[in-house]
Image (cartoon, rainbow, N blue to C red; front, side):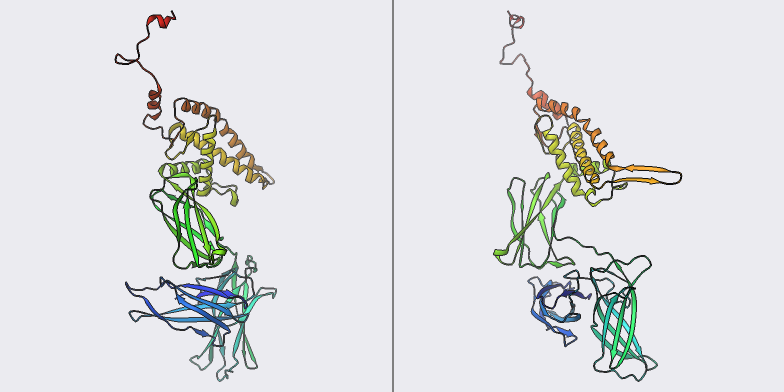
Length: 495
């Protein structure tokens, strides 16, 4: 089983949860958890509150104490109702270095060479020392590792976790040293042609031995804490997610519409959050059956607390779409043509699905306010209404991009001995928005016709002759059976 790695300072008291992911059979449960064995046994780490959660999916434990620059491996044996025994391990690193907190998992754990590590991560390493035959192994045998660069700057150091001894075929003493290497988040990424080094210093009585290996450090990345907005098709189950900086006893959520109507009562999540490099991840499955598709997002409000007095809240959007809205999103992306030909690669101008939904909503509001107030929700928009709505949405997208790029001075001049090329991106978006705004007069005239014929709201569907039927509905006609008398010649001539 891959080893879980946790980090704390000597003074901190931490609560951790290990995701077990055991291959239990149907009806099989965990019956006993043996007390943890510590390596080294002299570790100053103090364990408390070891227990399984109600779902048998997590093993919870508390950690306090410890000496800076040391690491401890903890191993539990879990016995099931069918007599199966599983081993669960975790390493607790005690350090004052700057490092991503909570769980850090390295896919190269337990390999002989680390090769590369993300800044702010940990890695398990194994290094070998070969000592001459007949070398006496002192009881004070120990090994210290250091992370340093080519200039000799030491970024982190600590004592190795465990040393195992054996003999080679020719009688030499082989020592395998196991360590948990910390790479602080303050370590710069490896430059081209340079590498960092891990230096191992083995002390055996009065004798010292050294070993080393090179490795690369790549840039730190993270998933920010907080809730994530979601886009899902109405009627499906939506997966709402939140990452919280630390575990809480209670995490719950509720759903509201834009009129402050509660559509889903406060629901508490059972079980512990999944540890990540940035906090604890909680997931909620929201059944959207009965929820209507809408460009106006629903609001998912998260609550998390240990005591009622420290309750905290956060919120995110839940957009529910249908085939018509998805088609509009595709048309928007195709028109802006930025998924493949992106000259302005700035994070704030990225055309994400959430950004497209925001532009479509702003375009809907702009269309409804244009010339005469209307109330189209655009969940099935077609014909002229759809074209006018998308035109207003494109204007919003172009103006937003123009403002973002203009603030960065996104203008270039490429000049060479034979070619000179000027590129000024922001005016392009301004001119595109102005060209689209030139179509607003036609949209205003179209809206006047809609309102005059009684079409001032709805889903925006004009297919199937809806406009023609509505015109017939408000006209007046005379027939032989009409209760209204046909006007006489005298009335027509004004006599």
